[in-house]
Amino acid sequence: MFKLDREQTYPYILIATICLLLTLWYSLISDSTLQSSLYVYQRDLIESGQWWRIITAHFMHSNVIHFGVNILGLFLLWLLHGEYSTPKSYFINVLILCVGISLSIYFWSTSIFWYVGLSGVLHGLFAWGVTIDIYLKRKTGYLLLLGLIIKLADEQLFSSSQYMSELIEVSVAIDAHLYGAIIGLIVGLVRVCIYSFPHVNNPRLK
Image (cartoon, rainbow, N blue to C red; front, top):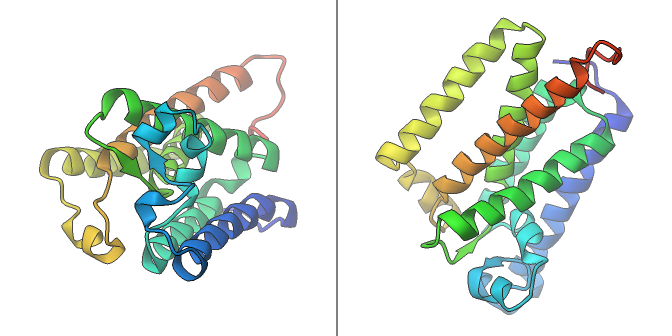
């Protein structure tokens, strides 16, 4: 955990604000259902050319509880691994995860027709940070990686998400968690390879 830096709070504040505004818009202003929202991942509408949904779906939430859980997770991950990125690289990571998760759902989880939430991105950010923990020889990185693997395996094998589904009033897209974690690991490995080069003097990967 690192000392709070005002510059490093910008990504968290911006993402939280976007999620809050979209959640309030859906909950208080819009008279449309969640599925018919302009910002939700909708397979058929993406196929018709509404590509922005690939990104915006991750910032939409089904209700206030869904929003609160994900924003709390975002905050905790920022405290845990925020030192490893600048605002620019953080936003790039989030964008890669948003696009990568949505495309993975589109091509490999064809039974998912609509999707909202930041949880897949959170799993990706966690996996990315764990990769760098291990690179920096932090023993907690191995424990965190083990915990992540156990969680993903439990979800895929036993689908143990009924309680959360009831809270957020939608099914938990466990495939998004898996895709996010895999993409996060890949992004982390790429950054480790880049900053492992002898001519790069940047051990914190900032």
